[in-house]
Image (tube, rainbow, N blue to C red; front, side):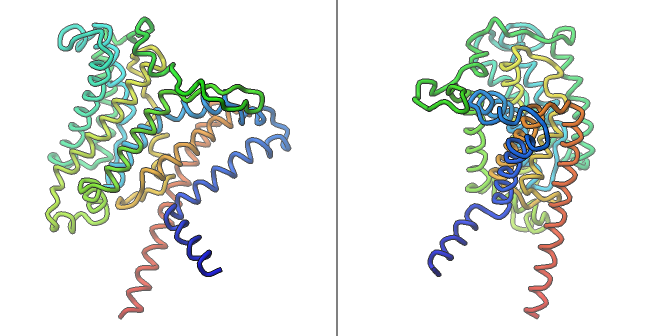
Length: 367
């Protein structure tokens, strides 16, 4: 029994208490949507468990916000914040579309057109440039990250309109090789049984891209010197500087990562909506930041994981999907999202206070 208990505790520690609580919350939420809603007289919850819903309305729907949240996690763990990720996604969306079809500032003059790879890279690089600007403002000009990225939220949104011809959306519906990113599915021929009367639809390419990016950033944060430096800066900036960590280099790098991932999100938004629209990323930053704090990140930095954010993104996606199935309108969903953000930050603050008390008690016992 002792060995079993020890193995159980080791597995719990490996998963993490925060991640375990997210998994439990996800199970409870699914139960509320699929079972309790029926008891309360709401229709639609029985449609949740179907391949059509899980692969279309959940797996695809979480991708864009999920990417923004993964990039945002890198910044928040270091004690910063990037409110501009939605506008950066809009820039990536417009740049990719303009390069692809050969219109606008980039497409008509600077880069070769009609090439999907070039268009995707252009959107990502545009996001990285925007991230570098954020990093420069925060590190060199020493502007508070909240104020800096609040300003660039508006500035980048304006730039997205300036890059588009006359500020209008750029259609890419005639570019099947590009829209393939959003429309194609993998493993469609796998013999997976029907679910609730719905046939297996395959895994969307969008979802595969999201998972790959999540794994890459997780490895970067958990197993590299760069990732350890980010945690060190978020935990204690002074100690990190005394340890020889270049705060300027790391911070600019982390904002570039956030911007590059946001640019990729904008590219995929273009493929999904078949339009490079300057308003594609508007409002997505709230959901992304909510997911990061819900995933266990601390508001002061030094704490948070990519896996936690990934689970939180799924939780937010299931919440939105469930409310859609049950017939709640958009305004109710926005209220729920706002309350979720407040609750996530409140829980984060409570955890920090509890940890401080535990440390203080341990120091008192040692002395």
